[in-house]
Length: 194
Image 1 (spheres, rainbow, N blue to C red):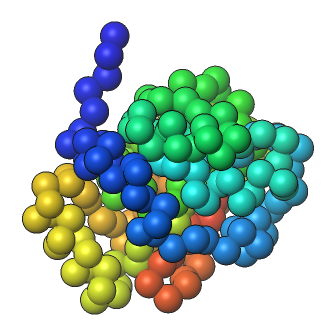
Image 2: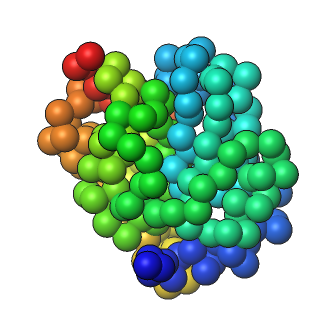
């Protein structure tokens, strides 16, 4: 059965050849610290596109897997030497508790159903695993302008505040904290049971 992709994935299919040149590189060390790396497990980069963020984290984990709806973005990720899986955040093709670290960078606002996506992120997270969601902070005027521009581009984006994201994750039984970095917020969540 083929899953329906949102209009946003078509935008990313078109952007794939240029995406890495348009986007800023993330600092690997602060992300590694926030994800509590190194880990002998798998890092799953959901909505990770070309793998521009997770490639840099590969030395700290056993394996990096990028899961994205855009085949063109994933082809770029494969060239960087990471494993790829085409799929949506709302229906992750991984077993319960199979992933030690889950990363979502600048993608949650593109997911068709953020609540269903969070349920899936939590479902695949291993006991004592960590989830890090990095999203533009809606408290910033520049982020609100970006959100408006994405609506004009018919990207079906829905930006949530860091507090709203944390509440959705907390409702799934994880402990969360918010760390702000300028116009970006990191929601860091831990699964306690083990």
